Length: 232
Image (spheres, rainbow, N blue to C red):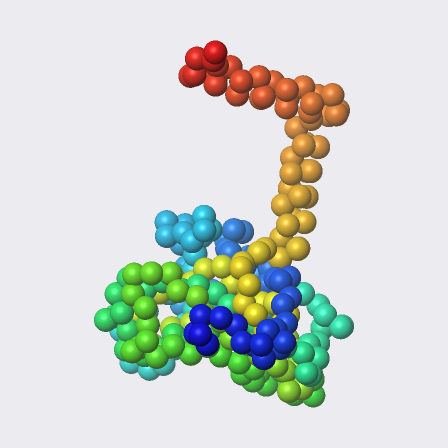
């Protein structure tokens, strides 16, 4: 029963946020907002949920490299700080074609700095050893983190520790202790709205011109349907 249903204690302690704090979390805008490390690239040929992915292809490494993608483009909260006692959950998906290419581990983690220090520290990590890596299926990684002190300059990153090839997709950082389904950051949604608005402003000088274009497109669709199907 415990494996099938949420316990009362788990239900009472459940905190759900939902809002994604990572901009361009699905690489829709390429590598914008991300630091892409050596032998790492944005892959538009292997997609997840229709989104591009981040491919880390490491080989010939004799030392640990921890190479992957890093997003420092988190929004400014409380003047730039995350507060002690707050709980956040980070998540992403990974895919591996061949686990035999791996000789070390894979991870998703969050790092940051204490307010009075300049060096970066680990805040939490979902760490997958080679024996537990999943081959041939998209697999979700998540880690819930409760900050023990105020932190600044936070980042979310995914990496391969040494050799191996993996794809990462649909990152999310949200408040609470539950990894919910991926959603874009509000900043990304507003960005897409602005693009549409700018496109309409550029291409149509008046509202009537825009409405006329919409009507024309609708008529084209209707005519296509009429030609394809016989109506009763």
